Length: 144
Image (cartoon, rainbow, N blue to C red; front, side, top):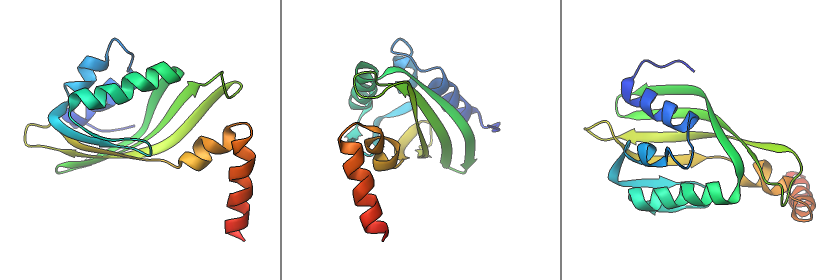
């Protein structure tokens, strides 16, 4: 990851060191009415964004983000990342999700809009017992 943009570096560092205790610091990098959207959530405001991450920490064991690429041009940025985690109740061993985030910064260099892009079917559902087989079969049927 290489970027020298101070606002983007703050976001990258906050995600790469994210824990339940450091979550308030991450949220301060977001505008008060920021929007966060991923395959499961579409929320506005720091409190609701915080609830998304609190839920993540409650559901996943040892989630950790690693930012592979961070690029900013004017008020927009893209992060390419990998999130490692464990979900022992449903999956054996460590798992990971690869994705990208599109960020838009406001005039105060706070994140005003955050949209995550990742394939929930491939990165999560296909790895689950029972449902994974059905998702893989559906994928093969659609692919022809």
